[in-house]
Image (cartoon, rainbow over all chains, first blue to last red; front, top):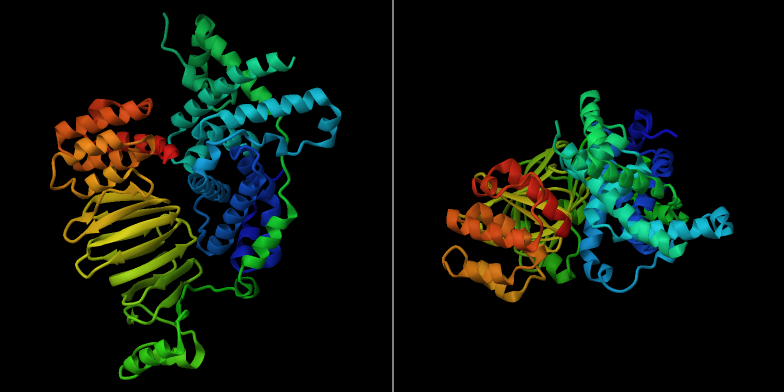
Length: 185
Length: 339
């Protein structure tokens, strides 16, 4: 899969080409949406809101993008900012009540395979329970395959901090999933 | 020889993100440390579990909303140069328009004449926009956003080039809504400069610089003579004549904390209240107070922050008290997840 959008597409977007906007959107939409969806515990409305915010900001400001940084770094920085902003606005909502994880769609093959679907739900629950700074790091690494250096730029922290957050995040996941898998088995 | 634990590097090792030398050091440690080997296995297991997470497909409705929200003019023709265009909108009533026209018709260099003909006009560097008590205005800032001027506001365009959009707010109130990479839009006031970090905010000030910054989206950095206040969405920050930006505070902070903050500069007992009333989220306020407190009080603030939330690795009391910029930035980056 092409992980970085071409300079030609960005240039066309800067020139106001609607088709180029659509191409760019199609390349990144699912990644931004998926990260947002898991960040917000499977809340489709929040994920849709964040995705819309990110691309609107992107399209509005793409004329200012100078190409001196990776495009994806800028895009994911917008996504992280949008997640943080939305989380601030929804702070009380997030801390109340059970998480609507069952709303995350699973593929038909997973629906056929009950055990796999159960496992997916367990992992979703474990990811949702991570503290936000670990959660976003794990999601960016897993779904967007960002390097540690890119993640450091996106998250405004050092590469060492990225490594530390991912180590701690994965350890928490493992701890939680060990017991969940044990319960489900 | 036993080396120190490598817990924080284990994910990087599994992900192949360490250089050869570091990878060897980690492997050498793992060979002799059961504790780290167990954590290594945990991390591998955690990563393996993530493979069970399906990628979700963004609903088609999102693109429809985006396409509807993008102004047609951006998509149909390019704008190679950033231009300031005031679109004087929201004049509440015909009376207000008439009054404003009467006022400015005696000053032919103003933009109001253009408004009368087209409703839209360009404005360049050095030009002023002023609203009276019954009018307001909206300025389109190139392609990066808009600024609404409240009644009784006086504002001048200072710079209008692609890499820097700068205005000077002499008095009154503006509401800025900017969607651009950080540090492209600046508002100078008598008490400092508001630097956009991708955000939406309201800034009001009097001619001396006393005012209030309220952020509703993203972040704003308010800077004055080396002093900086970082204000996130949901927070506000006072500005002071001859004093620059004050300490930001979340709008939902406890009232006693907010009141104490108002008198922090003049009342030594105010800090007691601030420390007692602070919640985890109010480390925003405490972090900014570190820069403004004397050494003994800085120590008290540090202790309260450390009690509210775990001090991250790489942040030491000693460096915080010395106001080491790198240490405080690292701490702020961690704390920001709770703000």
